[in-house]
Length: 190
Length: 190
DNA sequence: CTCTTAAATGAATAATTATTCAGTTATGTT
DNA sequence: AACATAACTGAATAATTATTCATTTAAGAG
Image 1 (cartoon, rainbow over the protein chains, first blue to last red):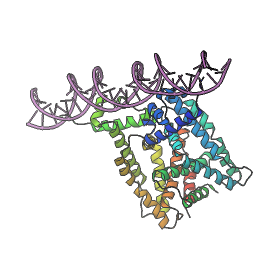
Image 2: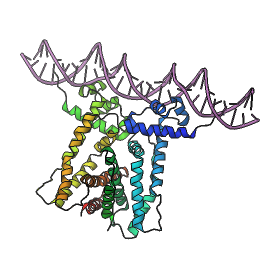
Image 3: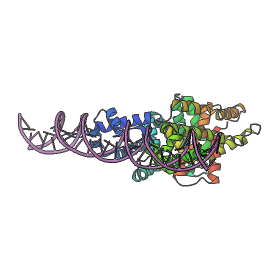
Image 4: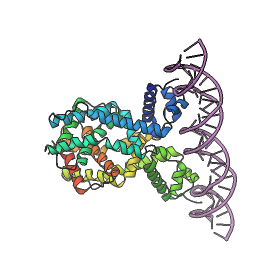
């Protein structure tokens, strides 16, 4: 008996990400994914029932990995501002280093691929981010605004910043990153 | 001789926007666009040479209309903060009221449809926004950060805010909008 | 009112792409 | 080593979709 090769799943994901970045979800075909992954088209269907399942699985995996990475090195027992800065930087770094995944996730939202189940499941994973903002409000550091509004404000400038750094081909400098963080902090603080 | 019907172009655009929002660029077909627009598939090809041309034209039109609307009622002779507030609010309002166009523009970036010409042309149209930020720096109101970084910061929270208001089905309240503007201003000001 | 011309139609065709499957290969098990 | 089993292959098929075209319709010119 022959067993499935775990690395193949990884190859398929990588191929898909790379192709979606090059041509968008609209332009990616199953045979192209297979070719890029170095396997036969038929093999792709052993690993994923169909294109829908492939995209949903990959989307969920990207979402999970991203949120997990956001809280790396975050220690709730440390002072708030330093913890917030760590999460802020983790988000920025994740999105810089995994830009292809960011593009995939963006493209998935208005696509025929994502199913309700995937959407519902992945939405829950955002809880820790809400908790972080709540803490800032509880400790009287952040403005009394709606938690969601504060979170969106934090996330928004990072998303846009990374996106534009990528498209304009100008990597974010230390100075710009510092400026971005300061603007974010000054905007949210009381 | 029969002339082309100007309203048909509008119908085609509306149909495309509506379908792209429902199923994403990946899920929209030419015959569906025609059916939704209330015309025959063949007629679509009288108005647009092919799918590429349709998408590029629509993208450019959306981009142009958006930037124009951003500077409605902006008067450079008035004090900076009030002018900035007007542009900020125009951006927010445009994106709320034209969410379908926002989605189309987002989806186009990593698609096989947009051609170099369209990308280059539409990029130039952003100049007035840069000018606005420069003015804020010249008048010593904004931080000394990179103009691009400041602009991205301003835009980012609006984009994310509108997107999330839409998906969470919770329209932005006056209070939230005010909070958003204050965070943006506090973040950018010296 | 008639004629001309271009728009409009939608079924037919041409491409393209998802998916299957009969045959092949490789790997664990005995 | 021989077997059983499931992965693997890629050409063939099934679906789907872009595009064309012979025909019909309608509006402006004379």
